[in-house]
Image 1 (cartoon, rainbow, N blue to C red):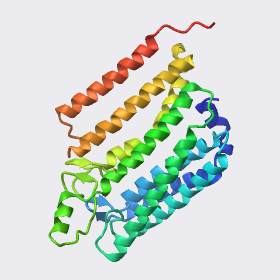
Image 2 (cartoon, rainbow, N blue to C red; image 1 turned 30 degrees about the vertical axis):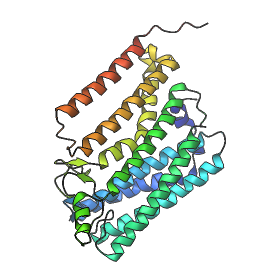
Image 3 (cartoon, rainbow, N blue to C red; image 1 turned 90 degrees about the vertical axis):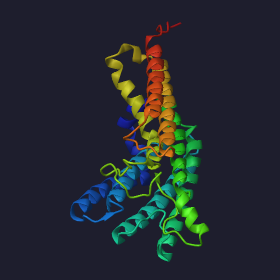
Image 4 (cartoon, one colour; image 1 turned 60 degrees about the vertical axis):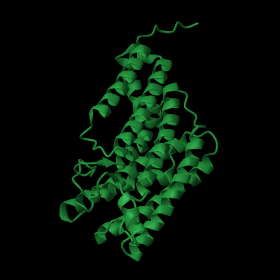
Length: 318
């Protein structure tokens, strides 16, 4: 069974709690848009409800994807269901705290300015560890998914692994900055511990809604790009399958599988590229020559590899 066929016929068999959570967070995202329109407060230069909106959209995609993945497991489904239930509970707890802080006009992450803020951030940090642990266990279980289509087989596995890597990259934001360490050494206590901007303080100019810095490196970018490999690679498999009627070469499942593996390698390279760019304190919208050269080399490698696969002689049935 291919991914496309699964999406059409097996939705009712998806894991119910995470399926409902995905739908609920979709509705919450709409409510956050409404909040953006009526509440014009900002925090560090960004709309106060932009962060809850981003988390709601991401959560909706995350839970809908895991709801589907759990349904593909031929065994260990009870364990996977329990882990996915834990994901829903942990993420919802974190999201409630995030919205609570947004309503107060306070930063939810890195905030150490008051005992209450520090406690909330500490609780959220422990929740994130729990979220990562459950996702790691689910990623291991994904290796047992049963998908007959080879492209779908590799898309599911590679997407889960790269998504876990992307979640792990979020840990880079929790390290104290040089300025925060200097404040500790001088006997002070910094109001914020950790940051997502590299090279500058948080709160400078950023992209609309996303908020990614336009003047410095931003560690949220590799976190975001990596995390959504869970959706990107299965979507690539779906796209290749949809193109089979137009491009007969893609009817060969080995060709599609190889293209998915090339896409996964290219996606891993993209995660590495944007991580490297952010750590060099370079804005995503102002890449230097070195970054552009690396991006061009990556694109060329992916493009040439895909061309070689498609142009290779078709297999002859035995």
